[in-house]
Amino acid sequence: MTDLLKTWRKATRLVKKRRPLSAALAFQDLLTPPSPKPARKRAKAPRAPGARDKPTRPAPGSFISGRHDGRHGALAYRLYTPMGSTRRRLPLVVMLHGCTQTAEDFATGTRMNRLADELGFLVLYPEQSQKANFARCWNWHAPENQGRGSGEAGMIAALTRHVITLCNANRTRVYIAGISAGGAMAAIVGAAYPDLFVAVGVHSGVPRGDIRSLRAALAAMQGKAGAVPTARLPRQLPTIVFHGDQDKVVHPSNAGGFLHNLERAGMGPLTLRSLPGKSDGGRDFSRRVYQDRLGTVLLEDWTIHGSGHSWSGGNPMASHTDPAGPDASREMLRFFLARRRHS
Image 1 (cartoon, rainbow, N blue to C red):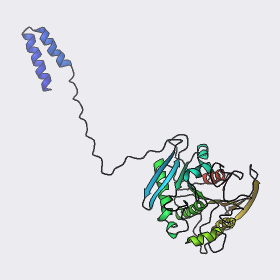
Image 2 (cartoon, helix red, strand yellow):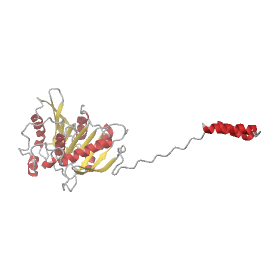
Image 3 (cartoon, one colour):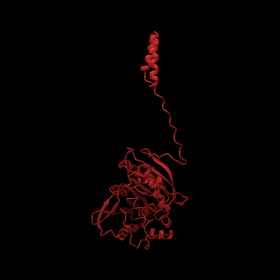
Image 4 (cartoon, rainbow, N blue to C red):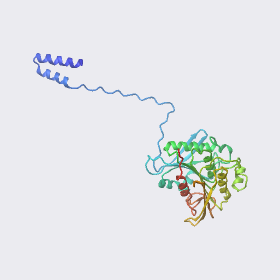
């Protein structure tokens, strides 16, 4: 306001002195709005020591390698993100390979990445290190790896939570499956973390039981009695099981242990439906479906006739697959994706 008065007085004096041009210029200054002051640049807040940028979800169609360092140890992994919108909150399937396999080999053999593009889900493949086991077997027989919050079970659960956060996955639709040692480990991890996983898939594996040593594990794999639990068990997660009746590595009788555990959990009377069939590749199979009194399927047990220790319907370009059998991957996904955890 003071500047405006000064300019007005100056222009008036110039008019009295008969200097019209100067007076006009003074009046022009009076009518021109003042230029805004340049905004001050705010200094960026200093970066906190040890702070990290928020991880970004992998691009659609990417198959990345990673390593997760958790409280229970470090674990390498492969992660497949399906094609499509990045805004979707996708289900997550955790796949545990068998002995002598790698995550990439297991992905190739099961064709899970291709199904992920078709059905829309994330696939996580934790990978056992040769340092932990020379043959890359999951050490499911060791007590330190069988409980919640410890060992390999804790490492797999921590990695799963990391990927859920990284990819903004659907926490109500998280599943775990595996073959052989990976199948046994999937059963253990699912039982230890029923608040994290919704359903379990086991191919050519041993059910959770009273196994605390390598010797006991080998006996169970040979089909010898004594590995099944005798005490009452907590509620079992819905489980789908595949086993070849010519399996020479893990005896086919182990498939019956999953029904034994279900009965031990005291979840009420069960009804059975038997559904025989034949795969496109010519393998006969027997499918047994166990339901509770409300009609909820609690267990599916597939016996693949003529098949050995191999992923049924798998890709022959990978190890431990039986291309002639029914498609275990697709059937597992049917079983998994029909289930979610209700709040």
